[in-house]
Length: 281
Length: 281
Image (cartoon, rainbow over all chains, first blue to last red; front, side, top):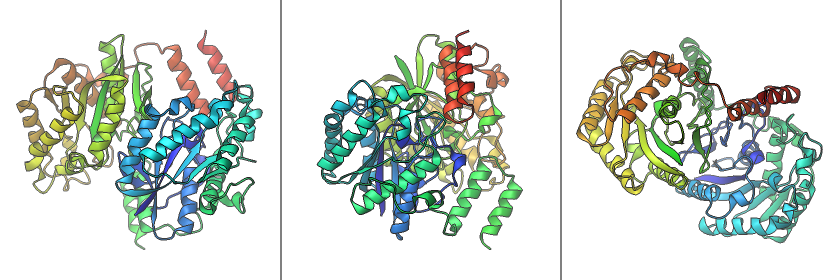
């Protein structure tokens, strides 16, 4: 049985880390939803835009696999760049899409958690004041419609770089949003807050970079696994980019990597044959 | 109002043409569905796999824009690599996903057509014999559930390269599949067949290359626009890769291209500012 997790929120949940900045994760026990089916996971998982890249879900899933040696994990990507809480209103497009995708996933998996990262869109003009009320309505309805009333919900804070970035002025209330997220997590059952303390960003000053996304994924998993808030960096998180590098790849994983090279036009048929023949050795 | 088209079938509808082989199409009147919303179209449109690339939908849409000067076109990507007709069975995952996505699109657009390319999976072991029966059930139910009983359905043939490619043996009944597709189109209302005559493939011998996908998209549009079968190459199709190159880009399109470069980490903030300031000139 596949254990699935719904990914919702805005761009930092979708992922904008640069793919070339971290080793790729190829793990045949990590799947992602495509057209209602679970496929071999490759980043970008959440292809909301052409600039989609590394998000926190891949290392979250790799950490899950380290703890769960037998089963598979399935990621359900429904995050949308630039989306506000209002954009996530019950029964509007993003909400309805997340429900539709998750229901397809529930046919072939058990939904084990919801991971959320959002709030940049509420980091100005006093919008943080309504955060908890709006968020509560969305989450309660989501749990109800998906029939998972007590499912764990992991919510992460916004990066401290927002205060300084080139768009710093726009996000000048991000600390207030973080306080609201923290309060929400502390006052609702089965909800855990994850700090973004120390995480860094792309040159755009908005999006978590690939290395920080790998770290953030570990923190999200720690919150999920330990059922507790993560209010400070976690042990060994500086090795996050190596999360899946300390085991040999399986034959299936090796074949997947070679297939991507060949069908993507990066190697010739002769090289493809050579590489494939070496897998069996 | 956005005029939308549902993209279904297997990998050659999803698109595996190499992105670098053709000029990109940036046209603000072409949208693609993401999370239930229409966004600025950029290839790959149908991200079913990490090797997704250029498909026929982009030049189909560009041709549509040449004829329709005012409105917008929205593409609904639901094609799945490697899928057989059985995989598309009514109410199974692919079918259910296509319904869910199209219903979201119908909230904000008028569904004007269905474009289908599929059949490699039925090109062996006598499977072509059941093609028409199976396909009819899928299409009829799709039209019924989406409440578009007479919507045009454009179906394309399989490439003649299949007989020779490195997987040639596997697809040894592709001509029979093409005959079934043609017969289906000739015997059903509002269904038009498009030949793949003369189209060529990637080195894998399976997937249409980017240039051929651009041509195929023109042929599909010709079938849609003229409401007729396209049984031979169409006029000027050799200029297909320039389909959207003969008009100046709008400010919105220029800004989109610059944003992708900057947020994708390809140019510095200084270059970003420079390029953005030049748009206004």
